[in-house]
Length: 173
Image 1 (cartoon, rainbow, N blue to C red):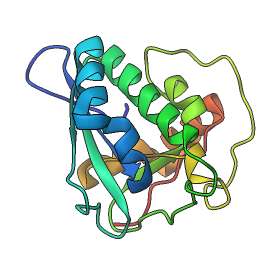
Image 2: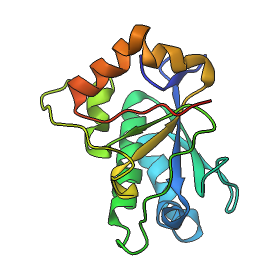
Image 3: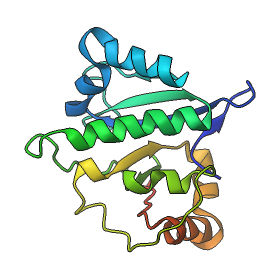
């Protein structure tokens, strides 16, 4: 159970994350050099929506990552670091979209929510509405899988939050 979609090719997964528009340039790099290098180093395929092509209800761009779980972890770690590096006056909290299910997770805890990284630390989750955008991860999941993530009576999402220390929130449809 995780918000990645397995492709038909063995070992390949897809992950969609939202990127604040202010951080896209540092992820792409001059002339696309940074993203090309990241693809070479990780073996992942990375596609970013065009400038001004935002996820509905946000000012954030969609980043589609395809690769192994290890490649997704590496790319996502790089993206989270770039977002954290942005100056505080640029990195503002943005509202969580309520148009489609997505999760909001603390990037310091993201690896703990993936199956390849066992949990060793527990802490109290913080409210995502008061957490700066630099400390949030927004993952897009299809409506059809939201129930799997939530689990019966919310059991799965509660377990993920308890085990990881992350705050996980699925927005309304």
